[in-house]
Image (tube, rainbow, N blue to C red; front, top):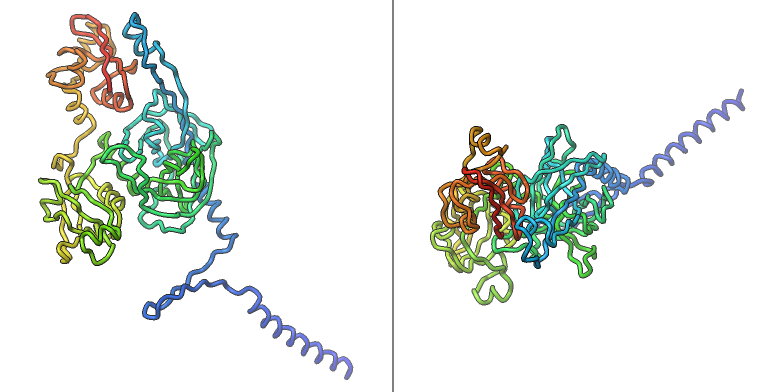
Length: 479
């Protein structure tokens, strides 16, 4: 009994000692990794936690899975015409057969609503005669163009279906340099491709969009993007859309380390305008601006390099009316710091004519705040539909025709021209009362169709129709 008692006591002591040592070892075995960024003493310090590779991979998996089903493959067909034609061709041959060749191209797009709205790049679809959209599950649709905006290189398409997978917009303003992002698209016709990288810069202006009204404030990333990725999604770790991939910096035409995406803040605004009006409602502040560098700061005797220099103001436009003058320094718009022309254009570009923005600026070393009511280039706050703008450009009123006239002329559709003025239609030789039935062989059912068709065309366009006396006619116009 004594021997058994000694054995029990010894066993208990060993167990207690083992537990004590295990607890001590356990505390040191898997410490939590903490990165501390030491700041000046008056600021204190911040701590951030480094995620494990397993956690990061799980986040990538979730966001990639979410994006893959909402990113589509876009295939386009378009006609490129020769500049040399036989003098004896008929007018129809001139536009459709003489030297014409059908080309194919492809890109990407992002479904942004369950009812089939798709955003992509303008350069992917701008000249397309036919647009085919293929989903990740291989379903195929023919898409219609809702609207195009060359100034931001964005386009809005529509396919007819319901309950489609789609991506929700993230906040591109909150995207940080160094943040992980995924680029999702169809490079080289390799469908449903995902690459990862970090945001390497924001508000980049790379001077690739034409025109003085172009808005370039790209998110720069090092996620691999190649031809075919255009129009695809840039998503954050949460799987939200923070940009539309649009360009790469390359000397070869292929990825060499940097890619550029249109921020979701601009995309949301352009999409909303195209859905409601068929065109973008472009707001202006009415100033010419320059980036502040050491040379500019010295010339203007500036105390620091913050803000954007106002080089000039346009008479009668918002800035001039609000008291902003040449030589002033714009510091903030709506409480967001502005330190480059591209940042200013991005902030203004998110608004419509009639919107008010708060501008903080320096004038003769005095800080001021002005509420600026934005307008269009003509100083108007009126929002105009694409049809209204097209009517002005075409130089005519366009009205529907009744069933009686359709039956009389043996036609099924058409829009009648009236009140001709100087413009594209009159210059082509079209007379009052002419009924436009087709443009480049596409049927015209209502006045809005004319703008939608012409907005995707470049070069020679054929207008077909008939006069009320039954005489058919063809007219060629140049765009």
